[in-house]
Amino acid sequence: MKKIAVFASGNGSNLQAIIDAIDNGLIRDACICLVVSDKKEAFALERARRANLPTRVFVPKDYPTREAYDRALVACLQAKGVDLVVLAGFMRLVTPYFVRAYPNRIMNIHPSLLPAFPGTRGVAAALAYGVKVTGVTVHFVDEGMDTGPIILQEATAVHDDDTEESLAARLHTIEHRLYPKAIDLWVRGKIRIVGRRCFLDE
Ligand code: GRF
Image (cartoon, rainbow, N blue to C red; front, side, top):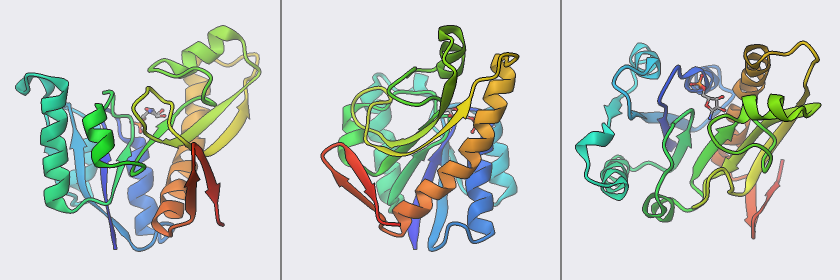
């Protein structure tokens, strides 16, 4: 049984999709052993409590540096025996210390087709640029911002009447399918990483 920690700062709809995927057997042989947030008021924490999952809040201002923050996180994850860290709308850049503690064992989901439009405003940036196709990327986290090996991507057309809200909603629907799929592949040992390329033995 693989132990997953999910990190979320906000609404937590991706956390919910992962909870549901475990409940309905889409992800097997894995459990969420911890939900972590940097924000006490994150609705993701409420979702975790409703699902009877343990939660921890790490408030950034309680730590002198970003690395001190990440050292506390890693100590907690190691104490819990976490195998995989899933960032699901966690609005902090993790430090190299964290990445080195969990090499290719931290996943992130991003609402664009990376390497296009990294950063926190991926949906707005894609719309402003005027691309006709955008999408969702699930990738491993390395020491850069949104730069690690890509596990899965799915594209969607940008419609002429799309707003940031309508496009974000469509991307979320894709995310809720793609993230559980990527996690399931990892749990079943189906992701081979060679250099920066991921090969999926489906
Ligand atoms: C998602 O769009 C994800 O791609 C990005 O943050 C958002 C989180 O949404 N990294 P939610 O909190 O899971 O609803």
